[in-house]
Image (tube, rainbow, N blue to C red):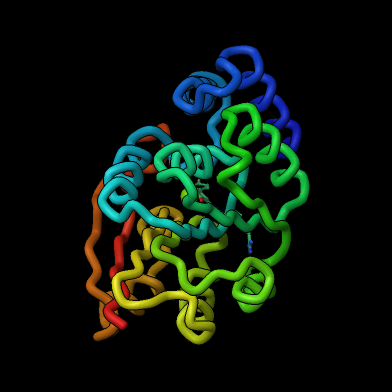
Length: 214
Ligand SMILES: Nc1ncnc2c1ncn2CCCCCNC(=O)c1cc(-c2ccc(F)cc2)cc(O)c1O
Ligand SMILES: [Mg+2]
């Protein structure tokens, strides 16, 4: 039963990881999901691509759509420079509750703001509520049919500016075909596909990195 799986994952982190050590939290989740119960974290293989793009961008303000258990939240927050902030948006309160505990266990709660609710409602409130000028980096990992509407919403709300980087998970599996068409055909994006595998499997998946040209 999915929600109980997330509490089992949290227990595995509390048992096998060291409090305040993000690397051990990441390894504990990867071990659990590879050997015990598969879960839809971005995972260790695509996680290395996420790490490399993040290090290149070095964002001061980052947004994650779809927190789930906080695995990618921890991967992103651990690489942020001092004073940088990550806002992560989760729709499902039970997922959010587990994610808060995993983020806190990694000792990254001061860099992360977890907001609960549908991305479509929360994105228009970002400027007013968090004083965000624009996001340097956005990780899209929520409902795949929300990637296009939410990207358009970010543009319309002035939350992306020249040089902002969007990184989308699962563009092959489960797939986000409309999103790929949108960013690859738009003159406002420079897009590139990073071929990889669906987390903890040999199935093809990949990440699409799209730089907003303004
Ligand atoms: N703030 C918000 N607003 C709207 N929706 C929101 C939200 N916050 C959350 N959600 C709701 C997203 C629920 C999770 C989305 N992710 C996925 O659905 C997902 C599925 C797979 C998968 C692949 C092969 C399979 F056989 C089965 C599953 C892999 C992945 O890496 C995935 O990210
Ligand atoms: Mg994903």
